[in-house]
Length: 304
Length: 264
Image (cartoon, rainbow over the protein chains, first blue to last red):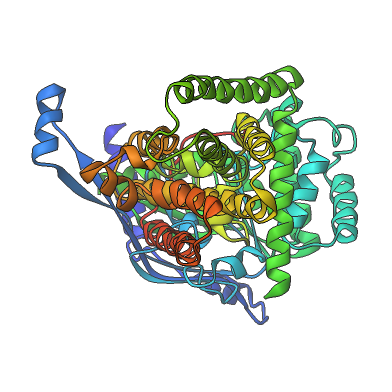
């Protein structure tokens, strides 16, 4: 058993020895001919954090005051990739792999230490506000809605943030509340909503200004399977109808399988795989579940 | 440019309105907080009434001037905490990585952050200041000067809080220093400046901006002096510019965070 496992890991490492595989090649195999517009371009992106270290106990604390010791953690190490307009991409990796840091650099929350980022042709470090009009973000672990207000009031607030007129906001709320089935609770304070209802409202709030790129950081975290499925369906529908580019991070393989055609796996701040979900699955002839494949890749890269 | 400013103001207005709505959810707490703050401030004046029955002036101030000083301190502090309360908890936002939701909005980060919270008891402070203004009756020009200095005082309080709070981008536990110094401004600012000599006077004029926020304005209201008037305005602008520069410099070091948080 152990031997088989070792062979399999070697196979993964060998197959993905070249690591970054341009997604365009997958299209050329299928012979599709179309102009590819890049929604996101990332070149050699890197980010280092300085973290304080101290020895254990009171003695360590005193020592740290006299001789503070900091350590550099390279969270993202020269990441390079592109995302096409209208594409749904899964950007995944184990905890601490650097995926949230990357998303935060793409959205202008964090300043990169090196490399180049362009989202819809805009550099987030230089034109953060201009970019913010074009993108939407949903952080599943962080709530951006005002909990004492109703979703309706929240959406009006977000409409004002994105400089929409009251009339435009009204129309958009009508349209999205229809699509996301919010009618029953749109006038209930957010604090009284269930988690599933809240996440739907969070997504609607991030879509109020018709963003061209939507960053979803674990949008289905903590949801039951039925609600998860609903949320996925809505995201898919939005991508289909509004041609929104979706940049998704999730630990839920169901999100990846049901939403994304392409997957980028990061580990230890580097891209270890960039390919289509289909080809990744095809590569494993034994037809194992995608979750197992991903776990194997995490482990093999971790060992390496 | 004008439209952008208008839109920013619209969002600020909405934010403050929603902050108020949040506080009004509990009517009893809302009203008692305001009333008790007015009473709390009023109780301090009792000791001054007693003191001025013994002496005609303290540190060069008469009772009316002390009342003006108290009123201006309360209204400036109140206005700063009604509009920009979040600036006084900025270290918490920085250290715990809570600036993310402001950074993904197409609005000025600093303005969005500092207007994102309201201290409801500060309404009591502000009202108290206005009541004192009516009681003291400093004349028409004095009335408008008082209102103007309430604004400059609030700006200086906010800018100083922002300056100290922004140091959290570099150092931990700046919340403690910020709270101590801002509360120190209130404590020292409610005493006549004439009682402070030497190093303490230097400290309160040039390190902690009590002099420019409160003492100079009271002198100008009582005896108008153009140079002093312009110095206060200039100081408020310069301190604000310095604080904004430090905030944006520090923002480049912002490390975000992954704590599970709700916007309450």
